[in-house]
Image 1 (cartoon, rainbow, N blue to C red):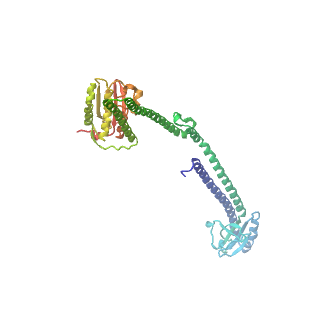
Image 2 (cartoon, rainbow, N blue to C red):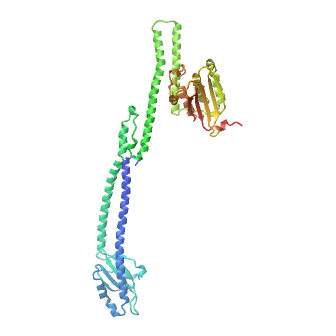
Image 3 (cartoon, rainbow, N blue to C red):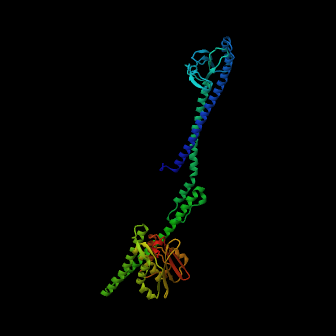
Length: 470
């Protein structure tokens, strides 16, 4: 059923429901018609039964009893198919009027009026009769109690009911067919907006990712689907644009060192040179190869984090000690720019020591690189009292970054402008790697830049127990 088309499933459901309703209605109507004719027969028989009881009660002598057949025969004039029989409880018949041949069980059971339910039986010719029997008292003393039976031949009713049922079931079958065809047409019409979406979506490709489906062109029930598709197209457009930019930047970053090595090698080989000149060219090429190797390693690391292929080792990390160790590593570079390194606060968390140190190193390196002479780089560690989140902030003085660039600072190879291109170590992957490590540890990263201060804020959720000190 899951592999069938939506139209097939909807038509089957609608046709099954309508067919079940029509069949149920047909059985109900058929039973009601039969019950109606049965009630008419019982009413007619009950009236004649009371008439017979009254006549027997008024028979005060044997002569009057013998005259009753003529009286009953007169009472049957105009009532085709109606029959009378009067007998005794031993099964003997006193007299009968009409074509019905009453079976003996109608008299042998000693029926009483409280049990005067209709009985159905057929004669030798196959005609069906509906009959009622009850006891009746004679009007003269010493006479035994009699049994009166009244029967009605029901061929006319049966013929009518048979024809009625045939007509009823024919129209019900016709209604089922019409409903099925109508259901298919209705479902096909209802699914027209989906076919329209399919046709419009089939025209979307890499060159038209800016296209959006019109929400007002579909029914209300499909508007959420269209919104979801449009949101997906927006994400695809953004991702495709970033991938295109990343591919261009990657090609540029790879082309530069390769071009440098090729040019230097060609120049060196253009004429005979001394051993020292060859060594100088090799040293230069080695630097470019080192840069390429570092870039490739960083790209492989980012690819692994994107696909969750890196499983961090978990241990308790003292952030104060780790940051002081990184400060010691950058002490010479900071002194060269007359930049102060400050640490405020303390805290610990669970994580991979080497990965987190790499992220901290990238943030501090980025801060020092963009801090002007005599500036300050501050690292702040704090814990939010209400939530227990650990906050790790990296601040540096310097020219603020325009707001339109802030969302893309963590993109690979992205640089705000040419003046922010670093040295050979800065290839535009440091912040991207740092963010991937923070996300790998369940944290989030935010950046703000205003009033001469740029701040990268990292938040690790729910580490209160590690940072509580008595």
